[in-house]
Image (cartoon, rainbow, N blue to C red; front, side):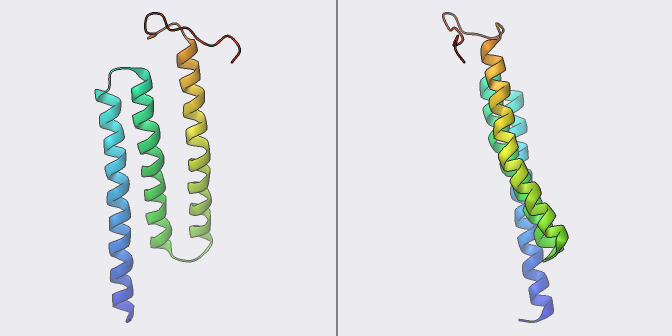
Length: 112
C-alpha cells in the first residue's frame, strides 16, 4: 500500500470513530433530556458517555499513530472505562437513599 492509501484508511477510521462517539454523546443527551426519572437518566448518560468518550479517545489515538501520545490516550480510555461506572453507581446509591423521587412504598436498604 502506498502512503496515500494508508492515510486514506487512517482518515476513514478516525472519521468513523468520531462519528460513533458523537452519536453516543447525542443519544446520552437526548436520554438525559427526555427520560422521566433520575435513575433512567443516569442509565442513559452513563452508558452512552462512557462509550462516546472511548470512541473519541480511540479516534485521537489512531490520528496520532504509534507513540507516547497514543499511549496516554489509551490510558485515559481505561481510566474513563473504570471510573465512570463507579461514579454513576455512587450517584445512583445516593439518589436511591435520598427521599426525593422515590416511588410509593420503596425504602432504602438499611445495611448498605
